[in-house]
Image 1 (cartoon, rainbow, N blue to C red):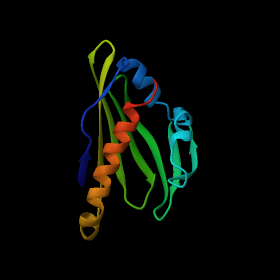
Image 2 (cartoon, rainbow, N blue to C red; image 1 turned 180 degrees about the horizontal axis):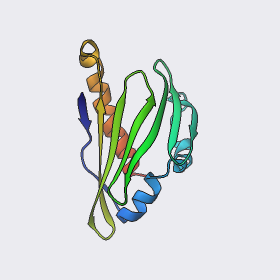
Image 3 (cartoon, one colour; image 1 turned 90 degrees about the vertical axis):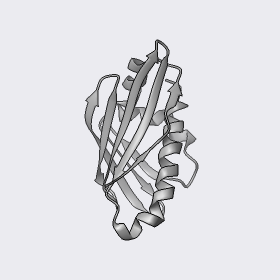
Length: 136
């Protein structure tokens, strides 16, 4: 298993409010229009699941398997070319100051590790930055 961790992001909202939004995948509808055209397609979601198609990769389906109020949302893949687990970790630094860190743990075959590590590091960082920029 290989871990990819974002830098810590600052969010100018209360941790309870951030958690309430991130722990319900239906809220992806808020950001759907911000996704660059052609980056993903066939985005579907419920409160616990989301799935989408990524060109040249295929369908990825995620499910929330653990929620710890105002602290953690844990997602695992139900369908993916490479199995992974993702943690969204929150920590409230001050009343309207929440810190977010995103960690992705992937089961990458040794032969692919050198090829996919840098793109996965970049993706984790960009997703964390995008989550921090949401209007909670």
